[in-house]
Amino acid sequence: STEFAEKMLAQYKSLYIVTIVLKEFLYNRKLLNTFQGGLSSYCLVLLIVALLQKHGDEGYMKVLRRFLKFYGEGFQPEKTGITLCEPE
Image 1 (tube, helix red, strand yellow):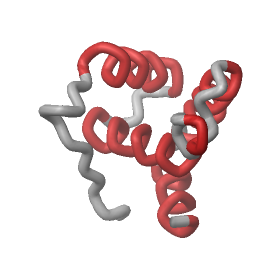
Image 2 (cartoon, helix red, strand yellow):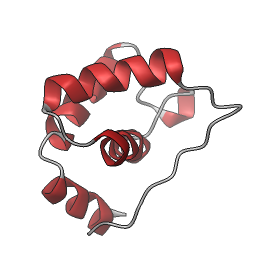
Image 3 (tube, one colour):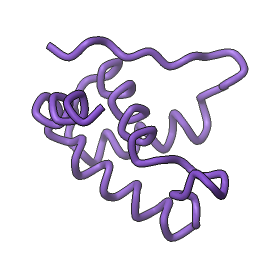
Image 4 (cartoon, one colour):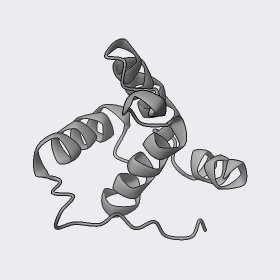
């Protein structure tokens, strides 16, 4: 998992900044702890990478906006799955 994350960080320039911003957002709402129903850091990275692979790296502000819109409004977990492609 560490190797995969490092490859994704090298491939997508916005990944690091978007991850840090979202981790802070989740931490402030007590949603970064998996034991209390939140997301793990690795899960958050996977969600961001899935979005980047689908839409491309358009800069961290656009990626952050797209992430919040997609997973906040458009994503339907009962109908949609998340798939990642192997790193290049």
